[in-house]
Length: 292
Length: 283
Image 1: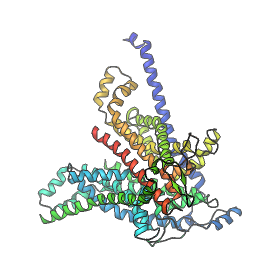
Image 2 (image 1 turned 180 degrees about the vertical axis):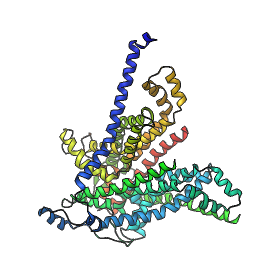
Image 3 (image 1 turned 180 degrees about the horizontal axis):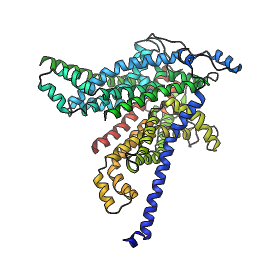
Image 4 (image 1 turned 90 degrees about the vertical axis):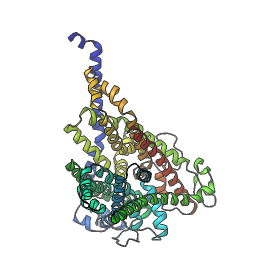
């Protein structure tokens, strides 16, 4: 046995095994390095600008920013218009996508293996793969051209809602698949009407799963820029009229990036956006982990 | 009995909304693209000129189709060793360990970063780095865009392949170990063959993601309406040309941009359908 182990063949096999392990570890560390580098860069360059005023004040004009730079001061103002716009549009998108998504998810779960639900599931999967910029184009043609007759918060929300919808359908169906059938059957056996079984048994039991899916979807659409460029356009003041152009944090980052006077604001805005998006991500993962 | 019927009707009619939305999307895209297609015919897809000069407007989508396919393919190739190694790390070598929990969480965070933040980081960190390394003069172009795309699709590719690798039955692997196989041999002779089609599907879906990425690519590809000739060449993808030119577009140009959107919709739809089909066949 000992002699066998020490043949050249075995030794080279073990050596190969070790080399590949080394490569796997190296590449894995390389894979996660961008997250460290990106967050590090955002914190290093963005923390100075972050303050209470940054959250509650509107964006400065290019001229104000230019004056501040030439006086070697920090750029005044903040991104309140973007934060409010993001909240407004994401809330509207959620109000559209969550009920529809959950009801469709329940339908898909309740009627497996039939033609119509299969079709809906496949179409929903295809929707999930549609690039966000195409969703922007579509909302432009639907809402900007025909409903609000101009760029608007509503158009932005519609594009975000189409983006959220398939994610929520999918997560709802997956959540309900994990609920034991016996719970539902017990309720039905007691003669509880079907809609009450859904409202009083299934949704409460699967609540944390549904919440995870919703938070993940919100986190995804919150950072979207491309569809909003074609729909919400942007605004330098807080706007609550859903038929008027509205700003959003990612849209502001894009504007700052394109304006040499404002470019210093990109880091703090991105840092704030990342804090919001990543917290949503982490919270939803925690909820999901708690379920298991 | 009656309420059950009402419930069913509500469930069905709301769900059918998804079909209506999807139909409406296709209808809107096709409707918007008709002026362009009726003006240029199929030449729209094969023409490489993009000339907005008034009077002799001519629009062709070839540079953008080429730009999209080249950057996405390059991103796929770059991401492959990285994401596959990470998937092996998570699902095979350090399965269920603390290390794999931490790495897995960081990969998830990578998926949560908005496209525009990737773009900024690419512009202010990655691009100067490539210039310093002597890869490119300006740092803009197909290679830089592909690199950032690769980083962006790594989390998807990793989690999809990881999921499939975790599904390989332990009995199979244990049988190989009992015959004296090394870990590497188990991976190459058992895990990969058993998981092959799932892994391929995962990479196809990641490719589908890369096709539609907009902001980061827009910020790094150089925005030239030409068919890229090399990795250092500038270009434009279908998504980035829409983002760039939409602002000042109307008439025939707007219709051409919508037509590009329609083509992008079709291409990503087909790629995703293939990926999903392979996964479905496996299950």
